[in-house]
Amino acid sequence: MIKYDRIRVLACDHLNLARGKYLTPEIAKTGTTHLSIGTYALGYDRVMVPAPGAMMLEGLPDMEATFDIESVRPGWEKNTGVVVANFHRNGSPLPLCARSRLQKSISTWQDRGLKPQIGIELEGFVFQRHENGSWVPYDTPGAFVYGTGKSVDPAGLVDLIWKKAIDCELPIQLINTEYDWPQFEFTLSHTDALKAADDAFLLRAMAKELLLENGFLLSFMPKPLSDRGGSGFHVNLSFSDKANNNAMENKNNTDGLSKLAKQSIGGLLHHHEGLTALVAPTVNSYRRIRPGNLAGYWANWGHDHRGVTVRIPEQRGKFTRLEWRLPDCASNPYVAIVCILEAAFLGVINKYSLPPEETGDCIENADSTCVAPETLGSALEALMNDNELTGAIGKSMVDHFFAIKTKEWNDYLNHTSDWETASYINFI
Image (tube, rainbow, N blue to C red; front, top):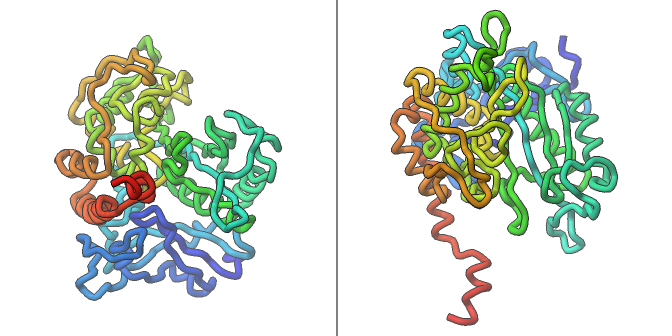
């Protein structure tokens, strides 16, 4: 049954890092391996925080990474299969595990006879080594938006990723250059919500490792270059009903949208400020979320309008969907999908009214007066003030996230940047 020399077990943590272990096929047949729950106490700086649930001060006990051995798929390393795991402790889902939390959100919708369908678009910048050893932007002198071929990708990196994605059974749908350079967009097929999250998680890990192996760095940092735009993680949402029809569509309405679609949009806009920290979870995220950046700044929506936070693409029928443009790739993909599903669900059960469609260009002007928080600190405050949203996401997960990210925010506030030193040290 297992045709690999080893199995790589991976799980997505709170920092969107691919934690895991390599197992022999014999051990993998048990469907379980163990990691320290203290993983959830870590920040990017490897400093531990006594965050709720991380058990830092309780001996750093084990948690179990559990997986279905039948779900092993081809990996991107030689003779290595890969499988995505959930975290459990003492036989029960770990409250901090976003993949388990997503399964709960999916079940909530399925209880209503609806199956969430998700499509993911990821954006990232590519860097190459300078002769001094530093990372500098990949040299793409002919780059332009929607570019393909050697003029925009002289090293053929797109081909490498595309071929490996096919080998790994990752449903890549398209790759192209984005507006800025050397920025690329990767779009995955619209599919069941859990599979969409797994595919996005694995594609990100695979593409980063593959390019690093070839001497390049693929960074999904929200805004790695000051003189260029940011990179998003766009989440496309639809629902299939029991008859396998797209429940977002209503052909009897002029705009072709169902009540479900409009209430889902209403939920995302109503909780816009509270959602931001969860899907824009770094200090750097807020350099992307600015007026005119087409990155979900305003709580607004529109038909085929890339300046709004919730865009309704023009396609109808089975392609009817909403595109949520606020998240970036620093967010855990499972958390991002939990957020869109829970906010949409709140929109349905609370019957939020839908504000008027945006008429501004969202470059120089916009109708909406509700905007995303300006910093990670203010976003964390907005999250904790949205009791309805935090209750829907789950107190355990939100309290843990708040503790980890508050430490990150305070570290930033206490850090003197190179820009500050360069600008002021000679004059003050």
